[in-house]
Image (cartoon, rainbow, N blue to C red; front, side):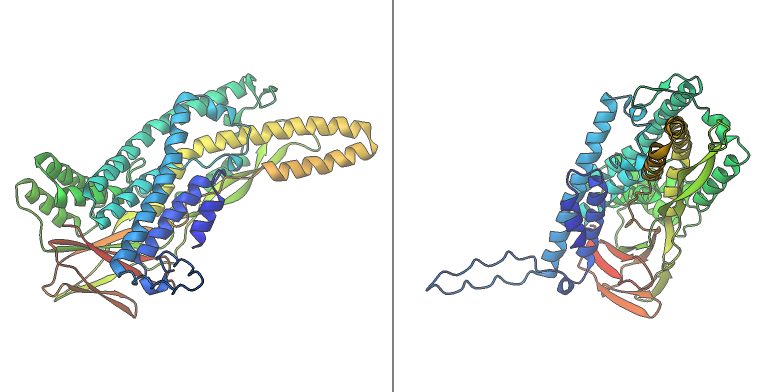
Length: 473
């Protein structure tokens, strides 16, 4: 599997966390695939010695064994990712000035420490893996972590804004020092107000948040949905059931257009009153691809007006949305036919994170790019004054240096979906459901149980449709 190879090769690299996240997603997809399409998970047979008969082959694993194998490996990959996340977060608590020290280092060259939505989804996926494995205690832990990460992200962002504002103030006063100890003087707020730079930055920002919906800072409705579902169905007491009810109540206010949430809020309220939810199947649909990131050039002022240096090009990130996806899933259960409804737009979740990080990204990029350009221009002038080859070689070196350092950080967890959708249907007596996408039909036969989950994943209209199911209760 390509994701395994990349994760192994990436151990110790600056992008190790990103490789682990992608690996965890890929292994989740493998758990949903037809076992016949996957590599044999059996251990290789030992080589027979001279005169000995070859050992008998091990029996082929069942579909359930293959499913469990890949789910456990997915958990292990996400565990490795979480170890990196926790290490970065603990380091940040000890080294409060770490971000200031990295100001003059290109952000794309720094270790990828994970964005807030990465961390929330990491734990949400682990919770799903554990639910499918029937390990509800572990699922509870991961759901609590996922929701706590949403709360922590708000505080972390406030600290980030304060730290970058302090850096901007020091730079404006000429008191900020670069990595070589040289004093830096640059007014980033004045640069943002520039009538050439300001509109270009605003256009990039507007395009990146065009799909954003008002979920709230760092809120991921899908994580909240899993939380509500878990505590409504698997709650162990009054406080658990009330927890589930509050999650669905919160979702009704965030995603009022979802036609299934009122029924789930009603079910959660009943569960809190001792009436357990039974005879229901949830069909969760993970569709499309989350936004990618590209870089755009914006000319920024240096405030050094010479024939060679008035404006320089700076690289800023921009979100690019992928609209090549299946926007609805049809579910037939007995006499009931319905379609899925969106519970969470990851476009919105990612865009909200982008919006919150944007002021910091802009300030850092402005200060870094402009001050380096100014210092390099001064060095270039000295070389030009010498004349001859010194000036020419200096020009080539400076051009190469600028090309290598003026790069936006476009790294992102690409295998996240564009949307999460779901439908809830009464479980038919024959426990058979039909999933329909266009002309493609897939029949799902459910195991005996009281509450079921069918999980469907599609990355694009032309990609294979992955379908799996498990008994939640």
